[in-house]
Structure formats: C-alpha cells, structure tokens
Image (cartoon, rainbow, N blue to C red; front, top):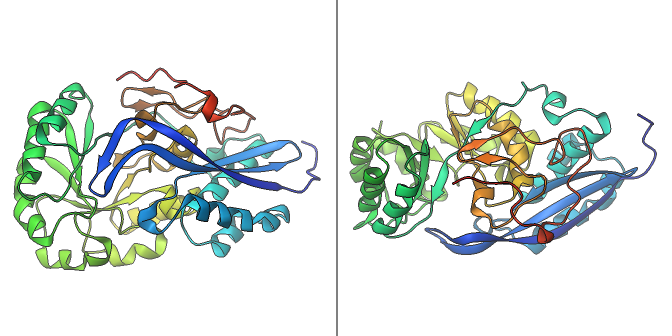
Amino acid sequence: MAPLTGARLLTARKQTIPTRGVFRISRGSRTGADVVVAQIEQDGIIGRGEATPYTRYGESVDGVLDIINSLSDGISAGMSREELQVILPSGAARNAIDCALWDLESKQAGLPVWQLAGLPEPQTLETAVTISLGDPEEMAAKALTLADWPLLKLKLAGEDEVEMERVRAVRESAPKARIIVDANEAWTLDMVARFSAELAELEIEMLEQPLPAAEDAPLATLGELPVPLGADESCHDLPTLERLRGLYQIINIKLDKTGGLTEALKMKIEAERMGFQVMVGCMVGSSLAMAPAALVAQGAHFVDLDGPIMLDRDRKPGLTYDKWRIEPVEPGLWGGGVQGLSADIEELPLPHEYRH
C-alpha cells in the first residue's frame, strides 16, 4: 500500500431511520431512531461509525454532532484511538469516532478489524429479540409469533398490578424459550424482593436494571436472589465495574455507553475477570452500529443485537439476519478491510431478507 499523505477529514451527520411500528419501554415510545454517522476520510479511503445519542444519558443529536465536529482538527492532525479515549468521555460521540477510526484503519491495512484487534475469527451469533411494552395480551400475542426463538427479552414498566401478568402471559405463549426481562429502572426494591421468586419459577434468566442507576445500592441488602440481576443503565465503562460488585451478576455492554469498540473490548475482558457474566446489547440502530458490537458479542452469555430487526430500512450491505442468527459481518459494511457502504440510508429499503 502506498504511504498515506493526506490529512484526515472528519464529518458527521444525523440520519433518522423509521422503526417497524411503535417501540415502547417504561420511559416512553418511539417510531424512529435518530442516529449520528461519523465519517473519516484520508486519501480517498473512508471509515464510518454510527452512534445513537440517548437522552437518558444527557445526550442529544445536536450535542453529539457538536462534540464530534470539535475534534475535527485533532483527527486531521492524526489523533489515535488511544488519544481519543483520553480526550473524550465515554458516550455516543466517542463511539461514532472510535468505530470510524477502526474502520479506516482496517481499510488502510487491508485487514479486518478482528485481526487488527487480535481476536478470533467471528462466528454466527444468536440474538435475543425484544418484545416491547404492552398489555399482557398484546405481549403474549407477540410472543406466540416468536415462540421458536431461543431468547426473548421483555420490556416491563414497573406497574405492580400487571407486571407479573405480562411475564406469565409471555411464558405461556413461549414455553420453550429462554426469557430475560428488562425493567429499565422502573421497579422498586420491594418489587424485586416480592417478584424474584416467581421470576425464577418461570425460568426467567435475568432481571435487567430493576432500580434507577443512582438508587441501586440497596440491592445489596437483598442478599442472594433466585434470579440473576443485570446492570444496564448502571454500567457504562471500565470505571463503573467496581461498584457493581455485590449488586449485579451480569453486565450489559453497549458501545454507545462505553464510547466505542476500544473500551468495550477492554471492558469485556475485565468484567469476565471479575466474575460477571457479559451481555452485549445495543440502542436502536442500523447494521453499521451492530457490526462492531458483534465482535464484542463473540462468546458473550447473552447477545441482544436486534436493532436492525426493529427498523423499517437498513444499510446496504447490512448484517444478514436469519431469524435469530446473525451471520459474520460482510466486508463492505464495516471493518472488513475493503471499501463499501456507499449508499445513503434514506435511499434504501430493507436490504437483507429478514425471516421472522
């Protein structure tokens, strides 16, 4: 490869991707995903990264775009991924730039990211599919259409009188599926204490983020529960792991929280060393956002990378979903060591034939 001579040009823009219907969790509902795509170009080679700003973490699309644009001079001068970790805190802006740098380095080297990172060759993954919040009958009907999926994730709301009705209804509709439930910070400590035994009887494999992240310390007073607890909103990056000991058994790694692939890979290693089970999840986003997360998800205990399944359209090339199976990333999507992904998302129908 000829030596690189040109400066690197960093640009970023917002894209809105409609969802397939309304997606509901305890904090609200949405009909589309507002994502930010960062692009770094050098000598005609382009690296891309996608992030989803999340208001729960004090982020906005405009704020993330401003942060990315503020690093234009630094990226032009050759800022490395390691320097990026010091300059920016974890979050969506750093994620978009970090993943764009990985993609650029991969194309410049002519090698896939998994080789650059010293990882084993990626294999097919099995993802959970999310059943968004609804009344018990609605969620049961949805579960019936997904009963052959190996892992279902239910969104809950903290509504004491109907919460367990939702779980029981879904279990009845999908008796063979593994099930995890996500309260998105909407439960109380009393609900955790009262409902954990029944969750275990229903063979629920994880209760994710039952309490608000800033108020989860009292979980330690409950002792060992019959259902494992997972940390999502409480778990962001490496420094947050230590305080989760004794509170949670599972941690959910999302690149929009860790601030990119670089931190996520380190975090997975450290979390497993500390005895946590690892889940790799996502915000609602396209295949461009899922591709780097799929590398972290290799060997994870739970994989929840169903973002593109929730969308009405996607990148081309995109990830190949055969029901719950996610095939290894196509080289032209991200991090494959070759150029690709030239079309804008607004121009595309759903490119992969997702079989429900």
